[in-house]
Image (cartoon, rainbow, N blue to C red; front, top):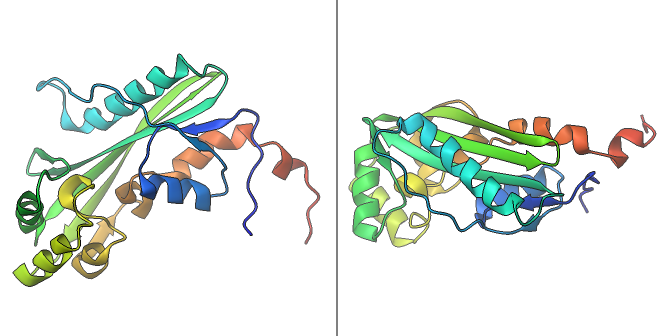
Length: 203
């Protein structure tokens, strides 16, 4: 059984994403899940790179009003191709079209994260460049038929079949593409870790 860190304040993940829950849990953190239901619209004048930071901060601040004495972690991920944001597909047909656009090209994945704590708020974006090889129509169709593309920005998961078989180059953090740059999250949460730092070294 994996050990978990004891934190100075309770940790709340403001997301119901299975990927984010998996990453945070595997990193050794115990937490509660409380999705933040906020308006995710943004101005057409907003630079695409700033959108995930704006939305993650909006989510964290909404929950901080209810839980002022907690660590609130929020995140938002966007996929950008040719200066356009690819959101979650509304249909399997749209998912197929998105993946066809990504095929053979390099796109950007930007994840914004916010940590709201009793000590203040921190927000940052992390970026990865992802290059797909040329995907065949049957590969895209097979993946889309399985349904995994429907709840993901850009219609794919880096940890899924299409990511494993299709991504030939990734410049940046794998976990940023998955939805949570855990190295940055750990750096922010580390000062709040209690017991692990006080335990005797075994080796």
